[in-house]
Length: 335
Image 1 (cartoon, rainbow, N blue to C red):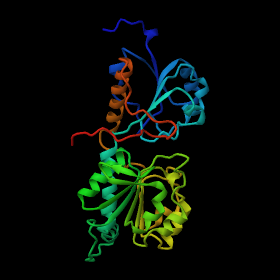
Image 2 (cartoon, helix red, strand yellow; image 1 turned 30 degrees about the vertical axis):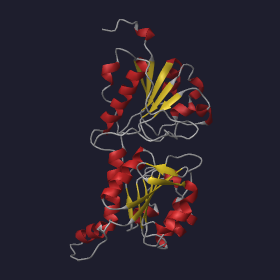
Image 3 (cartoon, rainbow, N blue to C red; image 1 turned 60 degrees about the vertical axis):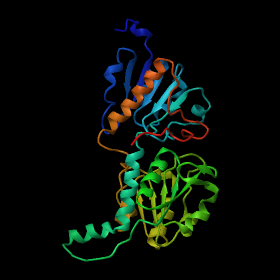
Image 4 (cartoon, rainbow, N blue to C red; image 1 turned 90 degrees about the vertical axis):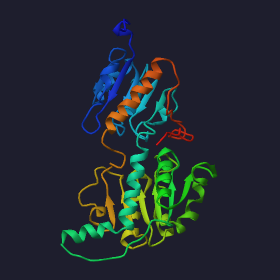
């Protein structure tokens, strides 16, 4: 039993809820840390001055960035998501506070979602579902994914899982990263500066980028005009990566054939938004990553990293605050 005085325990402030829940499974660490749960700015302002650790459970919350001036003792923040854009203010980026994220938890789930979206288009399942509601039998031929080309923009852990999954379906994958370089998974990663030159050959464009000042608004009217009229656009990164008005225009004018979107500039997608009613669009409510047991997986990842913190071991998934993501090739795991 830990006999350390309770007031000597490090304070962990847990911010927000996910799926309407607080992180499960934290009871096992309550004998080594002081847990403070907060859901509002005033609660955070009260708890933050004593906190050494923050768990940004609601990865979309901007409470912590707005209250950073109160973080006198803060040394580490764990974000329960892949993107850290809600947290990474200029003040936070310039500080000594370490940020870690949920890299690795969502790779396979998001890869399966991307593959499912591509299969929905290739096998014309949107039409099949529509015809079923009308009790109409209409035999058709459909596409094969094999030998089609997917440009995957983003080569982190999720992008690598997408690459592996698509290659298993016979898709020719071209990976895009910050700079061109040889890569053990993609063969050759192409530079983001080459993106426009790659788009005309793409049957599918899959976007899995974090939101940074370099990637904000990366896809606009110019990029959609460069794509084939038969191409489909898939975004499972962040809504702000895309000029949505330009995307709507491209879909309406048949500059591209369709889009599958899991993320949007405004979430939930507002009623009456034109994307809702387009027959060639899949609207997914920011759920590409979420699988049965995802909350437990996220919480368990934080607990594992907390164990490393308490025993003085290096933390995993440390974010490069100048880039906004965890650099490097992720550790390989057995299937």
